[in-house]
Image 1 (cartoon, rainbow, N blue to C red):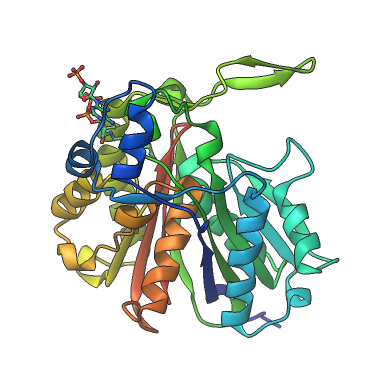
Image 2: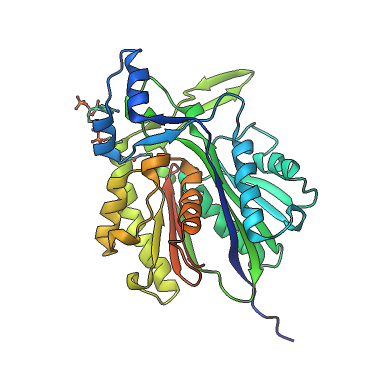
Length: 328
Ligand code: ACO
């Protein structure tokens, strides 16, 4: 007897943002009190960011992840107890351990799902989607909750204007279920550890103390060049796997790092700017949360319609990158 192939399909999306909104002007005024100069004009011209959401003290990654998960569960029309795999992509976990995924499992009232965190920085959600897809295809899971969630505001050096203006906090989630129809059509994951220094938070907890540098550091121009170089190739590779071309893409959802990277990528690939989902203006860069946040926004506002082809792309520290091509 031949078993029918198992694919995985997104059946629900959800997202969560902290209540507190900090505009560029608010941020510039706050930095000015410490003698650091920036402006709305500089931030918007160089990055496309207008505002970011910042979590209040006491709100952690697991809180935002749980809220996003609850919305995805509701949208998928399932019960939390139906979930048999939880993966949280994050670089800002609540604790060193237990994993944020275990905290989310408890908050949702699920007692049976396998749960673990995955760390691939801004590529984390795409890495987590491919991992969950592989579990489902191997028939080790049937209903996965895949989350990207971050409180990057906690690892920013608020005295470094070159980085602190770029990031925000948030979470996005999807329910990925086994299906006879794809679903995830093609995917590719990549890393180049030689580029570890261009984007890193190289601190550690050791013998009761933080050693090294606990703040995010970035060589912005090196990241820019690397991102545009790898994302186009990754996109073309997954399209070729699925026997598709750029013309088949209805929506391109790259990691929301910088609007100049997004526009450059779309232009290089010959994708009309109207097919680009951009949430960077209102969310800033939320690292692993940026792609699922954008996917949820564009699904809920009706842009993404059933049957359409969506390309998700992550890129970030490590250096890591990857793409997931899906039919929604
Ligand atoms: N406000 C005002 N001036 C600033 C600020 C600021 N917030 N930040 C830097 N500057 C100044 C610098 O001090 C420098 O001044 P100087 O010429 O007097 O020395 C000048 O602006 C230019 O600085 P650069 O760092 O060269 O600025 P650049 O044009 O490269 O823009 C940016 C910086 C936006 C980060 C750019 O490099 C970029 O887009 N990089 C892509 C990386 C990215 O988006 N990273 C996000 C996270 S990574 C990820 O998610 C994959």
